Length: 407
Image (tube, rainbow, N blue to C red):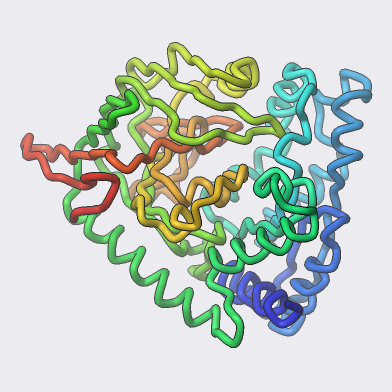
């Protein structure tokens, strides 16, 4: 087990972040997972990292804050957090986010407090904008904690659940006994890039989604959109992988060009709350109505963060035979569940258009990309999902049939 943990840490800093000699690294990590942060720090220093800066968090303290802190606390970001994020973003430091949290940590929390805190993130706009434009390398990963493991495997003992979830994570990130995860990822990333290249060659004007659970949606794409996936490049041309695992190819929709019905195929965990059985109606890009069997009030608050929260910001394609879906587990963790299914995100768009990384916020808006303080992925893929690409001359090309790529 210890060797696999070390290999996972090496994979993260070498492939996920691609730490450069003399570069600083900011690690955000729960205090319960300090043992893994230490492994990542050691691996980073071995690659020549100048300094590892820790940004600790704690599920219990965070929940207590949302339940009991003075209301005005949620209208601002603490000065030290603003300085840590904005200054390191400006300097081009690498950022590692180790996510390990109870999927229902905020159950019962006043949704207005969550909304106010989301709006306050405007105070770290420099960090967010530089992250979305890939100015610096960043990577999000997850490791198990008991409360999450028991949510995924409720029939098991705590120890068994932890062991089972670790194994699922190792499988998803291609870490195996005696294997070379770095080499495995090089091959994996190459396949994703080939898929992106094919979609870019076809240059669709729009995509039409249909399936048997009720999704019937047309998504227009910006004229100069680019499909991306696998690895990305920071402003210095250094390659990195923002999400581990990743199985998707993605682009940005035209903000005002989405019309129809979306029915989610999996639960969404957002801000420590589980939202289940939900659907959305969109007109001219805007979410005009939502329904949910569970957590509807949290979904409504999520699309009220700002004007852009009610528009889509990402279109992502994942085949139904994704290794993560074949694991046959609902992770209650978007990092994993989004890589088991085609998905969308409401909120901010990545600059997936030609020259997008060098565009200002105003230029991205003019190009038709949505801007928002939030970005929330939700899953729509099914075994019978059909996606038809519509070209500028009206020609139709099957992209997905029965949930699978057919290009």
